[in-house]
Image 1 (tube, one colour):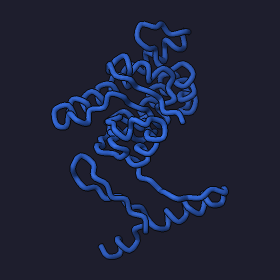
Image 2: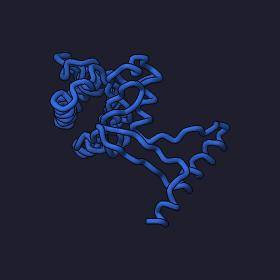
Image 3: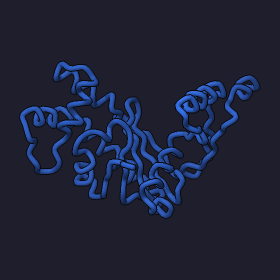
Image 4: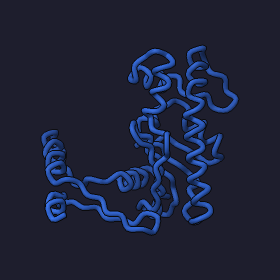
Length: 207
């Protein structure tokens, strides 16, 4: 344990998520290497944030209501999807969204269309998902909408379960608005479709 503690970074992030303490740390050599790489680009590295704090900082950059909140932030990453609630500029709740990572979306689409994952990602960005009763603009868009129906339903279900849990356990932090981050946020029409399904405003984060 002593050796492990010695190897932890000088930088250690401590926060309170869902009323429990969480301690986040990173290897010192990794943090040093990251700072060095950023300095080589001519930038000054001042903060290395863990995901929940990074999301809270990003939401606060575009929405002043984040200082009062609560506002939801969903990182639709390639390997993991994460739901975070930001209140008073800091993360207060964090939960993984099972099976909602972008890798899961791309695997089925790439296999069904016989393309590689980067091509599948480009197709999602170009055609996306059909919102509401709007008909897909082309045959390709129709096929993609059909093939992404299952992962879209999975994402909707996981968000609903998260919101229902918060409504029962901590109703004061149920978000009325949600921002989408990560590669999944590039899926065309996704924010509009989630807005329709969840009956709350969902936006793609933009600076």
